[in-house]
Length: 340
Ligand code: CO
Image 1 (cartoon, rainbow, N blue to C red):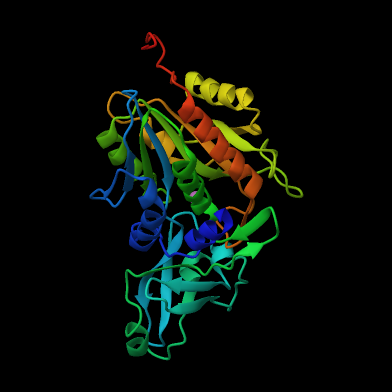
Image 2 (image 1 turned 90 degrees about the vertical axis):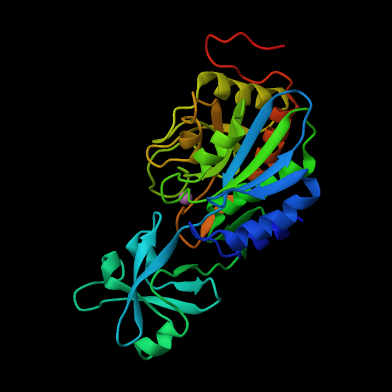
Protein backbone atom coordinates (compact mmCIF):
# COMPACT_ATOMS: atom_id res chain seq x y z
CA UNK A 1 0.00 0.00 0.00
CA UNK A 2 2.58 2.56 1.17
CA UNK A 3 5.08 1.43 -1.45
CA UNK A 4 2.44 1.71 -4.17
CA UNK A 5 1.46 5.21 -3.07
CA UNK A 6 5.14 6.22 -2.87
CA UNK A 7 5.73 4.96 -6.39
CA UNK A 8 2.76 6.94 -7.65
CA UNK A 9 4.09 10.13 -6.01
CA UNK A 10 7.64 9.55 -7.27
CA UNK A 11 6.62 9.13 -10.90
CA UNK A 12 4.35 12.18 -11.01
CA UNK A 13 5.81 15.32 -12.62
CA UNK A 14 6.37 18.36 -10.39
CA UNK A 15 9.49 20.55 -10.58
CA UNK A 16 9.51 23.81 -8.58
CA UNK A 17 6.82 26.21 -9.73
CA UNK A 18 5.12 23.49 -11.82
CA UNK A 19 3.43 21.51 -9.05
CA UNK A 20 -0.11 21.16 -10.46
CA UNK A 21 0.13 17.47 -11.37
CA UNK A 22 1.79 16.36 -8.13
CA UNK A 23 -0.67 18.49 -6.11
CA UNK A 24 -3.60 16.78 -7.85
CA UNK A 25 -2.05 13.37 -7.16
CA UNK A 26 -1.55 14.17 -3.45
CA UNK A 27 -5.06 15.62 -3.18
CA UNK A 28 -6.54 12.32 -4.36
CA UNK A 29 -4.77 10.47 -1.53
CA UNK A 30 -5.55 13.14 1.10
CA UNK A 31 -9.24 13.69 0.28
CA UNK A 32 -10.69 10.83 2.40
CA UNK A 33 -9.01 12.22 5.54
CA UNK A 34 -9.65 15.95 5.08
CA UNK A 35 -12.38 18.31 6.28
CA UNK A 36 -11.34 20.69 3.56
CA UNK A 37 -8.55 21.11 1.04
CA UNK A 38 -7.43 24.25 -0.75
CA UNK A 39 -4.51 25.63 -2.73
CA UNK A 40 -3.21 29.13 -2.05
CA UNK A 41 -1.99 31.68 -4.62
CA UNK A 42 1.52 30.17 -4.76
CA UNK A 43 0.11 26.65 -5.14
CA UNK A 44 0.69 25.23 -1.66
CA UNK A 45 -1.78 22.39 -1.08
CA UNK A 46 -3.35 22.84 2.36
CA UNK A 47 -5.19 19.87 3.84
CA UNK A 48 -7.20 20.78 6.94
CA UNK A 49 -8.52 18.50 9.67
CA UNK A 50 -10.60 20.13 12.41
CA UNK A 51 -9.73 19.60 16.08
CA UNK A 52 -11.08 20.57 19.48
CA UNK A 53 -7.97 21.23 21.61
CA UNK A 54 -7.76 24.86 20.48
CA UNK A 55 -4.21 24.33 19.19
CA UNK A 56 -3.10 24.30 15.57
CA UNK A 57 -0.34 22.03 14.33
CA UNK A 58 1.08 22.62 10.87
CA UNK A 59 2.70 19.57 9.30
CA UNK A 60 4.61 20.26 6.12
CA UNK A 61 6.50 18.57 3.32
CA UNK A 62 7.63 20.15 0.07
CA UNK A 63 6.17 18.48 -3.01
CA UNK A 64 8.39 20.08 -5.67
CA UNK A 65 11.38 18.30 -7.19
CA UNK A 66 14.60 19.54 -8.82
CA UNK A 67 14.58 19.92 -12.60
CA UNK A 68 15.98 21.67 -15.65
CA UNK A 69 14.47 24.63 -17.53
CA UNK A 70 14.87 25.25 -21.26
CA UNK A 71 16.67 28.57 -21.87
CA UNK A 72 17.28 28.35 -25.64
CA UNK A 73 16.59 26.12 -28.64
CA UNK A 74 19.20 26.09 -31.43
CA UNK A 75 18.74 25.64 -35.20
CA UNK A 76 19.51 21.91 -34.89
CA UNK A 77 16.82 21.37 -32.27
CA UNK A 78 19.07 21.07 -29.20
CA UNK A 79 17.73 22.62 -25.99
CA UNK A 80 20.10 24.54 -23.71
CA UNK A 81 19.18 24.27 -20.05
CA UNK A 82 19.61 25.84 -16.62
CA UNK A 83 19.09 24.15 -13.26
CA UNK A 84 15.84 24.47 -11.27
CA UNK A 85 17.16 23.92 -7.75
CA UNK A 86 20.37 22.13 -6.83
CA UNK A 87 21.23 20.14 -9.96
CA UNK A 88 24.95 19.58 -10.49
CA UNK A 89 26.08 19.44 -14.15
CA UNK A 90 28.02 16.22 -13.52
CA UNK A 91 24.77 14.56 -12.42
CA UNK A 92 22.68 16.17 -15.18
CA UNK A 93 24.77 14.76 -18.07
CA UNK A 94 23.80 11.51 -19.85
CA UNK A 95 20.35 11.32 -18.24
CA UNK A 96 16.84 10.52 -19.39
CA UNK A 97 14.47 13.45 -18.87
CA UNK A 98 10.74 13.98 -19.24
CA UNK A 99 8.65 17.13 -19.74
CA UNK A 100 5.19 17.95 -18.36
CA UNK A 101 3.53 16.90 -21.64
CA UNK A 102 5.28 13.52 -21.56
CA UNK A 103 7.95 14.38 -24.16
CA UNK A 104 11.07 12.35 -23.42
CA UNK A 105 14.68 13.27 -24.10
CA UNK A 106 18.28 12.65 -23.09
CA UNK A 107 21.03 15.03 -21.98
CA UNK A 108 24.24 15.44 -23.99
CA UNK A 109 27.31 17.65 -23.49
CA UNK A 110 29.89 19.52 -25.57
CA UNK A 111 32.69 17.03 -26.15
CA UNK A 112 35.45 19.23 -27.62
CA UNK A 113 37.45 19.56 -24.42
CA UNK A 114 35.07 18.25 -21.78
CA UNK A 115 33.97 14.95 -20.33
CA UNK A 116 30.45 14.56 -19.00
CA UNK A 117 31.86 14.85 -15.48
CA UNK A 118 33.59 18.20 -16.08
CA UNK A 119 31.12 19.95 -18.39
CA UNK A 120 29.48 23.08 -16.96
CA UNK A 121 25.70 23.52 -17.11
CA UNK A 122 25.81 25.89 -20.17
CA UNK A 123 27.71 23.13 -22.04
CA UNK A 124 24.89 20.62 -21.51
CA UNK A 125 21.85 20.26 -23.74
CA UNK A 126 18.71 18.16 -24.05
CA UNK A 127 18.19 16.10 -27.20
CA UNK A 128 14.49 15.33 -27.74
CA UNK A 129 15.07 13.67 -31.10
CA UNK A 130 14.30 16.80 -33.12
CA UNK A 131 16.39 17.68 -36.18
CA UNK A 132 15.69 21.41 -36.28
CA UNK A 133 14.26 24.25 -34.17
CA UNK A 134 10.77 24.11 -35.69
CA UNK A 135 10.27 20.42 -34.96
CA UNK A 136 11.64 20.89 -31.40
CA UNK A 137 9.28 23.83 -30.81
CA UNK A 138 6.36 21.67 -31.82
CA UNK A 139 6.91 19.83 -28.49
CA UNK A 140 8.88 22.06 -26.12
CA UNK A 141 9.43 25.80 -25.66
CA UNK A 142 11.75 28.12 -23.75
CA UNK A 143 10.55 28.16 -20.13
CA UNK A 144 9.39 24.55 -20.15
CA UNK A 145 10.86 22.31 -17.46
CA UNK A 146 11.95 18.68 -17.50
CA UNK A 147 12.84 16.34 -14.64
CA UNK A 148 14.97 13.21 -14.40
CA UNK A 149 12.82 10.33 -15.68
CA UNK A 150 12.35 8.06 -12.68
CA UNK A 151 12.77 4.35 -12.50
CA UNK A 152 11.50 2.96 -9.20
CA UNK A 153 14.18 0.58 -7.96
CA UNK A 154 12.79 -1.84 -5.40
CA UNK A 155 15.55 -3.38 -3.27
CA UNK A 156 13.22 -4.55 -0.49
CA UNK A 157 13.28 -2.24 2.54
CA UNK A 158 15.52 0.08 0.56
CA UNK A 159 14.15 1.78 -2.53
CA UNK A 160 15.63 4.28 -4.99
CA UNK A 161 14.20 6.75 -7.47
CA UNK A 162 14.47 10.33 -8.68
CA UNK A 163 12.31 12.75 -6.63
CA UNK A 164 12.67 10.71 -3.41
CA UNK A 165 13.53 14.22 -2.12
CA UNK A 166 10.85 14.96 -1.14
CA UNK A 167 8.08 12.59 -2.22
CA UNK A 168 9.08 10.15 0.54
CA UNK A 169 8.14 12.88 3.03
CA UNK A 170 4.88 13.55 1.12
CA UNK A 171 4.10 9.83 1.45
CA UNK A 172 4.91 9.96 5.18
CA UNK A 173 2.60 12.95 5.62
CA UNK A 174 -0.25 11.22 3.73
CA UNK A 175 0.20 8.13 5.88
CA UNK A 176 0.09 10.33 9.01
CA UNK A 177 -3.21 11.83 7.79
CA UNK A 178 -4.58 8.30 7.41
CA UNK A 179 -3.46 7.06 10.84
CA UNK A 180 -3.45 10.06 13.18
CA UNK A 181 -5.65 10.28 16.28
CA UNK A 182 -5.47 13.78 17.66
CA UNK A 183 -7.50 16.51 19.34
CA UNK A 184 -5.40 19.22 17.71
CA UNK A 185 -6.44 21.05 14.58
CA UNK A 186 -4.08 19.81 11.87
CA UNK A 187 -2.99 21.55 8.69
CA UNK A 188 -0.98 19.25 6.44
CA UNK A 189 0.73 21.49 3.90
CA UNK A 190 2.39 20.19 0.76
CA UNK A 191 4.57 23.18 -0.10
CA UNK A 192 5.83 24.50 -3.43
CA UNK A 193 9.23 25.81 -4.53
CA UNK A 194 11.35 24.54 -1.64
CA UNK A 195 14.16 23.51 -3.97
CA UNK A 196 14.66 27.04 -5.29
CA UNK A 197 14.98 28.69 -1.86
CA UNK A 198 12.17 27.78 0.56
CA UNK A 199 9.74 30.09 -1.25
CA UNK A 200 6.36 28.45 -0.67
CA UNK A 201 6.25 27.45 2.99
CA UNK A 202 6.33 30.85 4.69
CA UNK A 203 3.13 32.27 3.14
CA UNK A 204 1.28 29.08 4.13
CA UNK A 205 2.57 29.34 7.70
CA UNK A 206 1.57 33.01 7.79
CA UNK A 207 -2.00 32.09 6.87
CA UNK A 208 -2.24 29.16 9.29
CA UNK A 209 -0.53 30.80 12.29
CA UNK A 210 0.35 27.46 13.87
CA UNK A 211 1.24 26.78 17.52
CA UNK A 212 3.74 24.20 16.27
CA UNK A 213 5.17 23.18 12.91
CA UNK A 214 6.67 19.79 12.22
CA UNK A 215 8.33 19.78 8.82
CA UNK A 216 9.31 16.62 6.95
CA UNK A 217 12.19 16.41 4.50
CA UNK A 218 15.10 14.25 3.42
CA UNK A 219 18.65 14.60 4.77
CA UNK A 220 22.13 13.43 3.80
CA UNK A 221 23.82 10.38 5.29
CA UNK A 222 27.34 9.50 6.39
CA UNK A 223 27.11 5.78 5.68
CA UNK A 224 28.57 5.30 2.18
CA UNK A 225 32.24 4.57 1.33
CA UNK A 226 34.69 7.43 1.85
CA UNK A 227 31.98 10.04 2.41
CA UNK A 228 32.14 12.98 4.82
CA UNK A 229 31.45 12.26 8.50
CA UNK A 230 27.76 12.62 9.30
CA UNK A 231 25.72 10.95 12.02
CA UNK A 232 22.74 9.90 9.88
CA UNK A 233 22.49 6.37 8.51
CA UNK A 234 19.90 4.43 6.53
CA UNK A 235 17.80 2.15 8.70
CA UNK A 236 18.65 3.81 12.05
CA UNK A 237 15.30 5.58 12.34
CA UNK A 238 13.71 8.99 11.84
CA UNK A 239 16.26 11.81 12.03
CA UNK A 240 15.35 14.61 14.45
CA UNK A 241 16.98 17.78 13.20
CA UNK A 242 19.14 19.90 15.47
CA UNK A 243 20.53 22.24 12.82
CA UNK A 244 21.20 22.86 9.15
CA UNK A 245 22.16 26.00 7.24
CA UNK A 246 18.58 27.34 7.31
CA UNK A 247 17.55 26.62 10.88
CA UNK A 248 18.57 25.91 14.46
CA UNK A 249 15.67 23.95 15.90
CA UNK A 250 14.59 25.42 19.27
CA UNK A 251 15.61 23.22 22.20
CA UNK A 252 11.99 22.91 23.37
CA UNK A 253 10.84 21.49 20.03
CA UNK A 254 13.77 19.10 19.72
CA UNK A 255 13.27 17.87 23.27
CA UNK A 256 9.54 17.40 22.63
CA UNK A 257 10.26 15.20 19.59
CA UNK A 258 13.03 13.15 21.25
CA UNK A 259 10.89 12.68 24.40
CA UNK A 260 7.99 11.40 22.27
CA UNK A 261 10.33 9.01 20.42
CA UNK A 262 11.78 7.69 23.71
CA UNK A 263 8.31 7.29 25.28
CA UNK A 264 7.03 5.23 22.36
CA UNK A 265 10.30 3.35 21.66
CA UNK A 266 10.47 4.77 18.15
CA UNK A 267 13.90 4.49 16.51
CA UNK A 268 15.41 7.93 15.93
CA UNK A 269 18.76 9.56 15.28
CA UNK A 270 20.13 13.07 15.75
CA UNK A 271 20.63 15.20 12.67
CA UNK A 272 23.05 18.01 11.96
CA UNK A 273 23.56 18.94 8.33
CA UNK A 274 26.68 20.93 7.39
CA UNK A 275 25.02 22.59 4.37
CA UNK A 276 21.52 22.64 2.95
CA UNK A 277 18.26 24.04 4.21
CA UNK A 278 14.63 23.07 4.66
CA UNK A 279 11.24 24.76 4.90
CA UNK A 280 11.59 24.67 8.71
CA UNK A 281 13.93 27.67 8.41
CA UNK A 282 11.38 29.70 6.47
CA UNK A 283 8.40 28.67 8.61
CA UNK A 284 10.01 29.62 11.94
CA UNK A 285 10.51 33.21 10.75
CA UNK A 286 6.94 34.24 9.91
CA UNK A 287 4.87 36.65 12.03
CA UNK A 288 6.48 36.91 15.48
CA UNK A 289 8.16 33.54 15.09
CA UNK A 290 6.79 29.99 14.93
CA UNK A 291 7.98 27.02 16.99
CA UNK A 292 9.16 24.65 14.28
CA UNK A 293 11.07 21.39 14.14
CA UNK A 294 11.96 18.90 11.46
CA UNK A 295 11.94 15.13 11.09
CA UNK A 296 14.11 13.91 8.22
CA UNK A 297 14.36 10.72 6.22
CA UNK A 298 18.05 9.82 5.72
CA UNK A 299 18.68 9.64 1.97
CA UNK A 300 21.73 8.55 -0.01
CA UNK A 301 22.73 10.21 -3.31
CA UNK A 302 20.46 13.24 -2.77
CA UNK A 303 19.69 15.32 -5.88
CA UNK A 304 20.46 12.46 -8.28
CA UNK A 305 18.06 10.12 -10.14
CA UNK A 306 18.87 7.33 -7.65
CA UNK A 307 18.02 8.88 -4.29
CA UNK A 308 17.88 5.92 -1.88
CA UNK A 309 16.00 5.55 1.41
CA UNK A 310 14.99 2.84 3.88
CA UNK A 311 11.23 2.33 4.18
CA UNK A 312 11.74 1.45 7.87
CA UNK A 313 12.96 5.04 8.48
CA UNK A 314 9.81 6.36 6.80
CA UNK A 315 7.66 4.10 9.01
CA UNK A 316 9.45 5.41 12.12
CA UNK A 317 8.82 8.97 10.92
CA UNK A 318 5.09 8.21 10.51
CA UNK A 319 4.94 6.75 14.02
CA UNK A 320 6.85 9.69 15.50
CA UNK A 321 4.59 12.34 13.94
CA UNK A 322 1.44 10.40 14.96
CA UNK A 323 2.73 10.03 18.52
CA UNK A 324 3.64 13.75 18.68
CA UNK A 325 0.09 14.66 17.59
CA UNK A 326 -1.34 12.55 20.45
CA UNK A 327 0.49 14.70 23.02
CA UNK A 328 -1.89 17.12 24.68
CA UNK A 329 0.88 19.53 25.75
CA UNK A 330 2.81 21.00 22.84
CA UNK A 331 6.19 22.71 23.27
CA UNK A 332 6.04 26.35 24.30
CA UNK A 333 8.34 29.29 23.57
CA UNK A 334 11.00 30.17 26.17
CA UNK A 335 9.55 32.36 28.92
CA UNK A 336 5.98 31.32 28.13
CA UNK A 337 3.88 29.58 30.71
CA UNK A 338 2.33 26.36 29.37
CA UNK A 339 -1.38 26.78 28.66
CA UNK A 340 -3.37 24.01 30.31
CO1 CO B 1 16.16 18.80 -2.14
